[in-house]
Length: 79
Image (cartoon, rainbow, N blue to C red):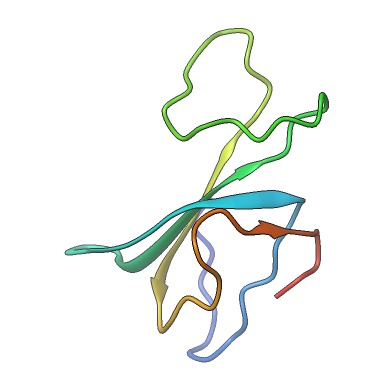
């Protein structure tokens, strides 16, 4: 799902998640990738891709700045 927001709109964590990667790319600008916490409490790595996995990756792109470093755990609703 690709959601658009007005410039300056704060990003809010939709679920409990861990920031896995913060980087710049040509098409997405400043990007933050995070993994949502699975029901068993584990935060998957970005390179997981097994049929038995229940986690998912969240990608936030075209950001003006990133306020949290890699490894940060955010609670649902946290900016």
